[in-house]
Image 1: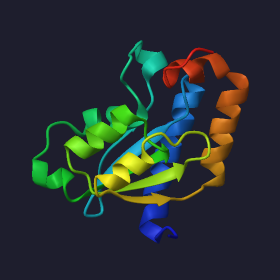
Image 2 (image 1 turned 180 degrees about the horizontal axis):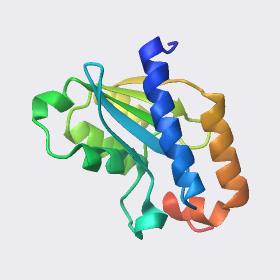
Image 3 (image 1 turned 90 degrees about the vertical axis):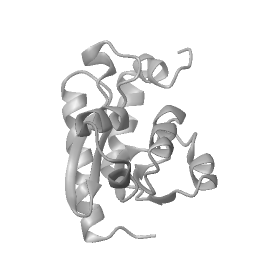
Length: 153
């Protein structure tokens, strides 16, 4: 399914966050939460920067959105530069976010079947910038990437 113009604009916000995270010495994964055309929050993987075990791009974004009524989440779209891990997929499922736009899933694709089985609409952009960021991550910081996804390097 091709991206709409709005999808492209919001995915680009997530990509900006991913680039900021990389420039900070972290992992280049970004996210944006959008409700009815309004950007509620953006976030990036800040595990390195914050010394956190759970501050992935999606969880950082949702934390930045703050407390919202459940109905807002149910009408929102989560944009992420990389296919979500199970923690992030679980968070999106807990809050019943119905649609997730994924920048790329070549590098990581753990939870997509599970998300789809839980009724989520998944749109994979196969975005060249997202792919390049993750390729660089795996080449230049492989031990950090392994840590992020919970495997031994």
